[in-house]
Length: 296
Length: 262
Image (cartoon, rainbow over the protein chains, first blue to last red):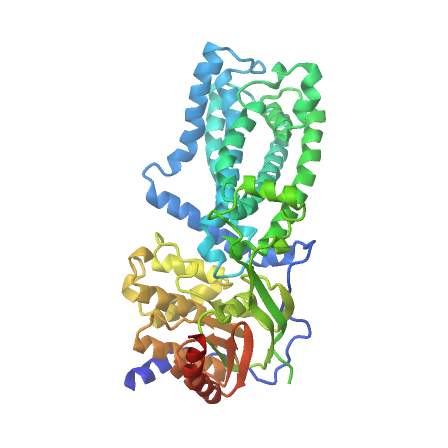
């Protein structure tokens, strides 16, 4: 009996709610079966942004607690890949690199590519890995793949430090063209979000999507001008080639960094592909969101 | 008096035996979408497999401040109902309106990450359950005191016993201070003293005007804290009234049902 009294006094006295207090006229939550076309509730997502920050913080914390290399891997990954390509495609085969020294040419685009491919993969696995949260609490599921991508974006920013170092080493001047850099980061962010959301929602229902993804990404890497210059593509195939949204982004990014001529048609083409892709992908995600807890 | 929870003809259908393999593959999906173009988007196609209704035509209203116990046999649909009200899953039919902020505790260790410490998990879990950082910081000491994990705050939660997990999960949910609280079988792994503590907390919340929906197999607890009880059987509400009466009816009917099922 005494323990009961002790614990009772230890409990905070809550502010008394007058039972006769007015209930809101509109329900705070409305629960309905899923419709064919669901709207995206941006207000709700904004209200839950703390969850987003926490999911990101959690992933970063766990990653750095467990690995010895930790932060260093974020930088090592693009560097190691660049070294491999620099030897084989830069030295031995001598792939054209827009007149730039091959290592920095490749490193710049590999930086973007490492972000995009890692972000798409972590986003695709994110819902399944967080199954225990999805089946217990409600918050907009969009935040989970978004947090996975956010973490990779942070990695990108850190690894960009090495890029600055390389620019100094090769004595490449930074010109006004560099003001366009944020545009390309924004574009690749949107593209990654679009594909990441599709991967995440499809992977919940069809688990082999997660296994197919790395293979598709590998193929996409070679179809994009990441380790070679897009100048190798013959003029008649140019249009078809530019349908790949990464072409406009990667070429534009390198143009901004190294003060090369911008290929505005392919940049516009990329934007025209990314925008509808993002809209469709968000709607597919929201549509499938209602069954995540049942499927995962 | 207006209700704080209104549930109208909620139904939830699940499909059984839909998949031969553990998870469908894209190949199978392509095959069946050749058979029916609608399949890819609509889960309700079912295409000939058995369907069960976990909930069917469930309607009820809850007034503000009521502490409602929900009882019934296993598989009656109690957890499904709470999951729908907590927005974890969507209903197949019907609708519900909630006129207050909802907090829920539907299972232990919600959102806990094993490698993070107790302190870190309080912030993480609190954020996931909808608390702002400042709120969590303010209530931090009370949460720790309630959960009795003062000495284990900086240990990774993978080292916690299941009882500690539960205490911490309940402590965080209890300090959310929502207008509606949904609790699903939170007493299963608690020892007697913590059970008393939880029940007392629920009683206090009810006295302060919080509306509570409380699923439990523990009839003692339902009788002691609830002002009303609902009984679910086979997905529908079969009884609704004072906890004493509903629980007695349930216990009285037990032997009959066992005979019928033989």
